[in-house]
Image (cartoon, rainbow, N blue to C red):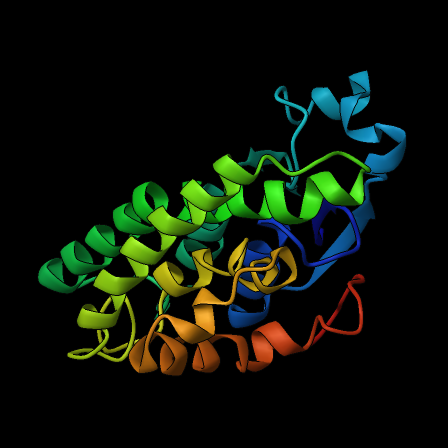
Length: 216
């Protein structure tokens, strides 16, 4: 039975990281489109899969899983050996360090900047400029540290591309549309790393839209 992915047919937000991991692991899937504009994600049927009414959700046989990072880790673990999560104890520790930094020091600020600079205006709501500016300032501070880290290693989790890098595609690509150019302007090492991440076929294959796939 093919794995099912419940999500809008777009790469924006948390679904982006899941789609990239699906492609990196060459996992066939069936897309079950969720229309968030009509609040389909708030229906009782969907809440039975995701009690917090968020996207995405995967259904792998009888196994149901939500939360994008958990989904990505599950997909990587199913495809052993997987290069997306290292197994050597020291490399794994570096990976977990990078994953913690993304979750605590990148995601909250990128998410806020995208909500204020893109999502709210798209819904006809005003941007809170103070909140937006604070988020961008915090993000700039994080990326200044990334710049130093990436001066000595190719990717954020070490020398190999990993889920640490994948996790950044949830909101990183939306920052420019939200009026924040930090992913390319924070420094040459950040720009080099980010350019390499979003140039991977596992990301670019979804630029023309998202649909079910039987093969890669």
